[in-house]
Image (cartoon, rainbow, N blue to C red; front, top):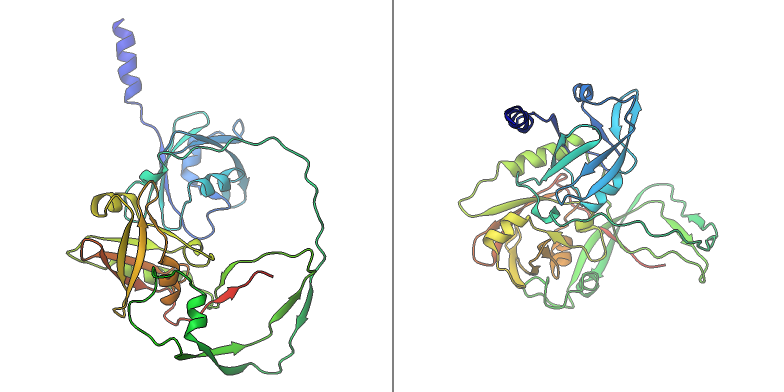
Amino acid sequence: MVKQQQKNRADVHVRKPHFFKVLLGDFSQRLKIPVRFMKHISMKSLEKVVLRGPSGSRWPVKLSRTGKGTFLSDGWMNFVKTHALREYEFLVFRYNGRTLFDVLVFDITACEREDLFNIRRRKRLRKHKLEVLSLPQPEVIKTELKETQIQDVVYPVTMIKDACPDSVQGESLVNSETDKHVEIKVEVTEIPIVAASPKKCLKTQGYLSRRRPVSDEERSKAWEAANSFMSNFPYTVVCLSALHVYKASPTLTLPTPFSREHLPRRRTNLVFRDPNGQAWVIMFIPGMRNWLSGGWPAFARGNNLEEGDICVFELVGPIEFHVHIFRVVDETVPMIKLSSI
């Protein structure tokens, strides 16, 4: 009896090996396991592992080995999508032996993501035969331009507002004349024109960025600048992903710990003041995800927000925020709206 109790106490104090990963770059396809950690895993007898997420649900993931190391591969993408993992988030993996890893997820505020506690793995649906329709190859007609030209194009303000319809929510509170024109310079290069059959066509929605490619150094500088922000008011930091800015109707999730501590637990209109001092009305929907919904698309496009930009939301009043924007590229270029064709 005494020996059994001693054995149980010894088991409690057995140390489990851990490693952590900061999600950077193209992490959604595969994730590398640190080389020194591989001494705990036998690749000869182990081809698959199981990731147990914050909710307790399990995801099978295949291990693959290349000349560059050992990676979590097949099944890892499903884990990433289900948990909506974002760049710069911090994951801790605890190896429980055999095939099981416990995974803890922390957001960029260094707090554990509580919204993942209720995530459940979707069950596989039965396979059914589907009739696949083959679409004709679209013809691509290129406009031949000898030199890149710059043209001045004038758009009415009403056209710009139509691109971000949100009725009252999301409109700037600064009065503007509806018949005023805004002059925008558009660079004209070779533009592919897609011709598709009217009966069989592909629908494309959202916005297309025309920003130049961004370097890792620029992303790091933006991140360092955002981290240097200090205030006596409560604030939270969010790094924008493509889903936050390029979708036809994008939304944004505020970190759960911040929302629960500082924001009302009912639907509320928040006021966002951008760096120019303009005020925007944004609908906040509390819950498991704490959404910024109505009004956020207009705010994002009105401030030319792009993937990788970092927003610091500083709560200066009960429902009023000052939004500080740290861009990865200082120059802003209006995005192109992709219409359904």
